[in-house]
Length: 322
Length: 263
Figure 1: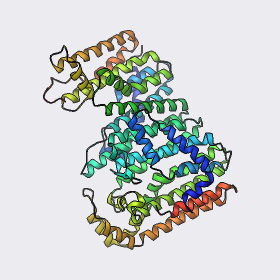
Figure 2: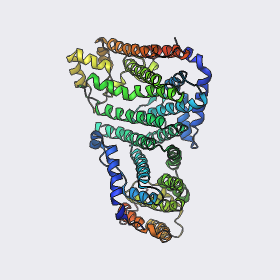
Figure 3: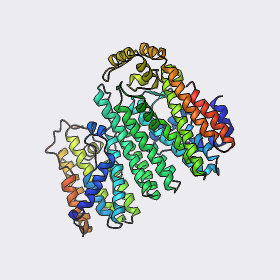
């Protein structure tokens, strides 16, 4: 099932979120406004806002209150992308020029900071202390996760635990938090909030593992940037971890060929070796295990229509091709 | 009148809390210079504590200084292409540390349950970034325009918080002192050959009666200092804090000026 088909069931609410996002990022300064709107128009799956809305269907649903959480979380995600492109020195995102590439790093820093401030202001619609604690904790964890990712770059001896902890902070937490905040804003019980949080967390883990797989198997057109980018930047993801574990010889070659101070243009031979190692299949199987855990959390939730959509979305996210 | 030394213990506690919150062994290895601006910390705490509790003043000062550190560290993100791992990591960590400090201010305000202040911080930060863009994109402009932007960038957040705590009369102090600090910083950098829109605006457009760049810059510095002295007279109970800030936190004028270097 395609994402558009799933989203079709709650299209009117997504339109409200899109409109709100558009209105929220209308900066006074022309460059800030263009940089932000270009990024918004580049698309994106809007996973976080959609998870907020669906989670809220387990309680008292009020789109006009919920939109503030949904928009805030998407803006946090957007701000992190703008700064990530500076961190990764990325020229393209979703097939378009990044802000840092179209302008420069300084504009990207100001744009990211501006969007982040908008996100906080949007969340401040709510007076609930817990909502702000949850959001700010998640951002702190995201930052620490990214710092540790940089620390671990070109460290070919890291273990699975380090990888899982990193992707939890980098991706899964914000999706988990999206579910939990939607549930809180809709006034659901603690138990529903807990299960939705876990659901989001497991889906988020699956989402990031799938992303890491696509970095090896996707084409430039599919993923919007050249394949093998993670390995080129020294980021060790699950397929590579598995491949190096299975073949110490491949690990030796990776260590010898990929070093911090060299550019790595011709990645094809190494990518092919990782693919042939069974690392992709292993990563997909772990992603599936996380999806299964997510489905188990869903089973225990009350039977509302949103459950079906969550189920379809989780399946899509874990098995998407780009 | 509160003597600066009487606040020493409280200011030290804020600095320790800042250091404790922002400590990360890996970051320290790469960017040891990032930290709290002690001069701003003591000055702002002294102002806020005139009209609120020590606890409140401490939290709000800490949040403001975290935001300041976040803005400062993001200003240091390099623009040029890099080809070494150390330079790359340095840039990457500057980006992330700034983001981390921003999340810390938000988290501290959330813990203290200060949602109105969260709104104030986030709205002001938007405006600061807008004005940073105004300055960054400007190729040239009048001194007054650029100075207005820089004054807000340097002191806007402090001014808004002071208004929130019903201390609007203190705003001018922060505007003048923090702009003066920026002016001296720009002057020093410019004299070493770095570009400065502020210095350019003064030396390009206001040269009518002056014989050298040094005369113009010194004259403007004198004007700014006169304004500060007037504020000291007006706020005699705050004079010692202002003098301490000027003597300990603000750079002196550069020794001479190599006119061939400046741009």
